[in-house]
Length: 424
Image (cartoon, rainbow, N blue to C red):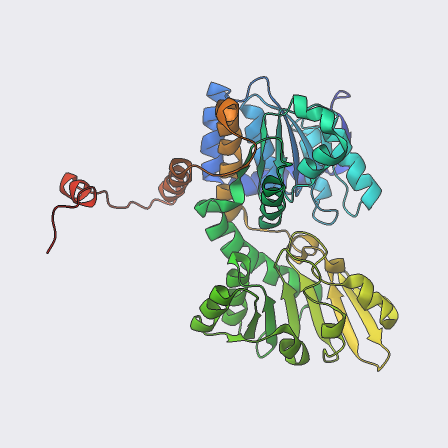
């Protein structure tokens, strides 16, 4: 093994490193955009001298992002953004084969989770890289001394962007953040195709049920909900959507799905999947009317969307039936099944998004870090969108890697689009 004593870490088993390295290399084969960026970073070192603290899902795809940031000259420190999403073999490989200080263990408890956040923040980072905004919120609540060294950060998730925009609106956000999640090459693909496929994958691995013919309730019709509804429909499920936004609800109707209030869906649904970024969207009164055998899962970032504490309180018994599948028996004999402790099921029981999708998401992360380095002195402490030219360049690189060419505007067309004189 190549491990050295000077790579700080807290991982489950360094002996898994070789297995992790093979998996990281397999993922890299499907990440040509990030690979191209890494080659440029290796030559130009745009992040030289920067310390970067990342709180992300510790997966093979994330490992390739860490390699890219390190190739760019950054000193990178990584901790997990979710206790159940860590791949222990990936964490080991990052330490042993790639020299990335990594603090992540599958199933770590809440205290260890925040100890790991403390470990990466103790490095006094210049840039934060978040998946849910736990780094930023910790800095602003209990590590305010770090505000002297931080120039900015990035955020990957819808949930995190919601938290950060709220901080900005309240006037408490102290440094600029690039909302990677808002990039077209992120949410159109990662959220829709990645979450859609990986959530179905997680449900099937945890249950091995047949989706065809089931009433499949998608709670929230954002980009993740759109993707999941499409995949569930493709496997023969009868999709029902619940929403609070009238425009999204209307879109779900136009897409061919049944739309109804959650209380109505609760009584007829077989499978429920939350992906709203909000709290207790599946609550006590919903579970009170669910049919026996109902399966409840979450694919939102935090484990607050299902009221798991209430489910436990209203049950007479609780047992694990198979990995990531718990049975809760109600007083009237009904059985409700919870997947993955109410955490991200696509990462708890499956492997998250395919590498080819994360290729674009993590390309955005890498280029956003470079953008922050170059522009931090002129940015205000608020949430920024990914620059359009960066977004377009990532899409161009992805098409190029797929061997696909597109048209370009002629000079005449460019002139026409930029003028107003020519009409009917």
